[in-house]
Image (cartoon, rainbow, N blue to C red; front, side, top):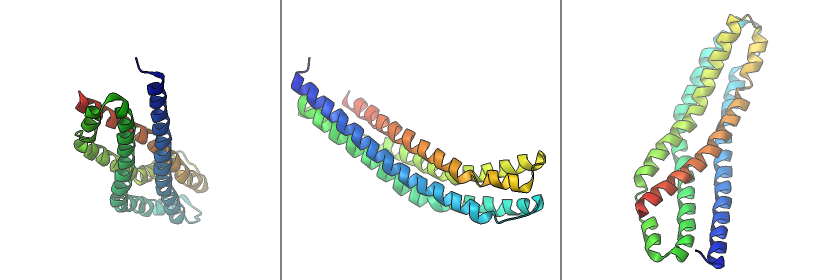
Length: 199
């Protein structure tokens, strides 16, 4: 049974860990919102005013191409941003476990410090890059789907265009969901890897 002092220390570590998690999520979210903002600019730039459905169809292909090119350009940046987020989560976990390790013992601290997280890191890094680069690709797919559905149902071109112009907002919501879930998922994955290495 842990003493009161040990319980206080554990609660403090958990509070610090939670605060760091929120900072990491906020930072990651800001960066993903930048991607959403760029997608919004691409969509709005590619959607000049037009009068007919034929004008809209003419703009569809260049818009999709622009979003797909943005996804390709995004890969190196996505890799860097994902690696930074994972480093923050990893560092946060290391310090939290190290603080708990003071009460548990030096042996566990050494295990955590040299745990085999490298393979897990590479796997999660690739997943993060895919998620980030999926944002413009999903936007391109949404634009295509909205255009086809609108044209087949007889919607006017300006009604379809107004729905397409909402793509930036939809992408921003998706970016925030990715930031929220992926920081938490990465943190729990590190915890699982660390626990397996201790056992």
